[in-house]
Image (cartoon, rainbow, N blue to C red; front, side, top):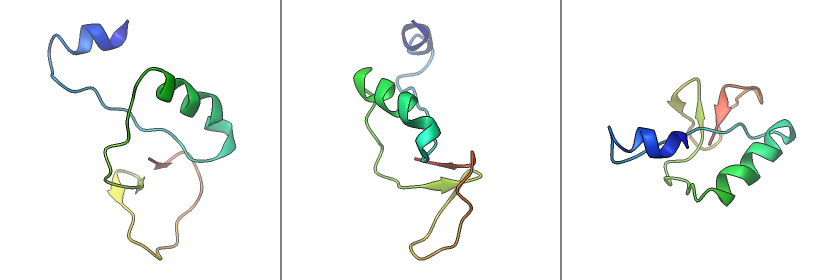
Length: 63
């Protein structure tokens, strides 16, 4: 598994997953594999989204 290889080099492995329904299967898979959100919220193009901000629901909006 990729996680086992990655943990040999780092003690944490991170992912981002899209928020719209096209990512539903990936969202479920990551939960089943034990991934837990870091609690930092949503990002858009690697920048944190502030409450009330207008963002585009596309592949760059991730949790």
